[in-house]
Length: 133
Image 1 (tube, rainbow, N blue to C red):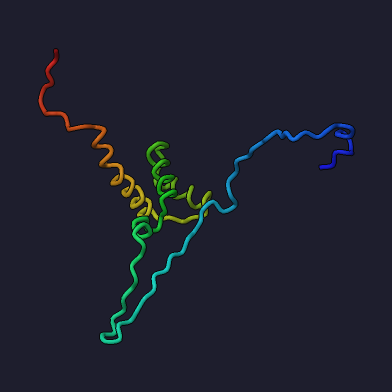
Image 2 (cartoon, one colour):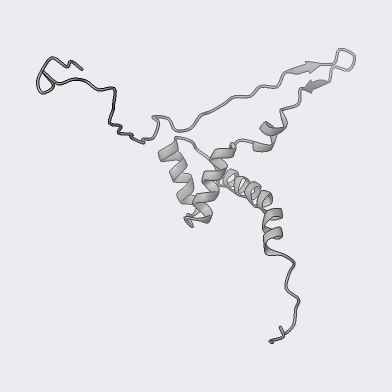
């Protein structure tokens, strides 16, 4: 920006700035990361052996941790149907995910939250009539 032209001509620039932030979606909001595991042939048996995947990659599966969290949020907090989540993933995120993969992602979240939920909820209530004081 030039300070010698109107409407700023004659003004003294300060080392102060007004800030305006904008939040927008990236053109491609999903990042696809390809992981590779090398395969080897045992010369004695001819058997093919594959190197192990890193633990976190194998645990995440097709749907990574952030997308899993988004899917769980849409399903639990927003009460979104599987069909609508699939459409959202396809139309907004550009990622085609099957109903089965969505179910697996939600199952991962359910299993991960089961222990903390049980600790918060405490022991199950005893059956029968509760006594009043």
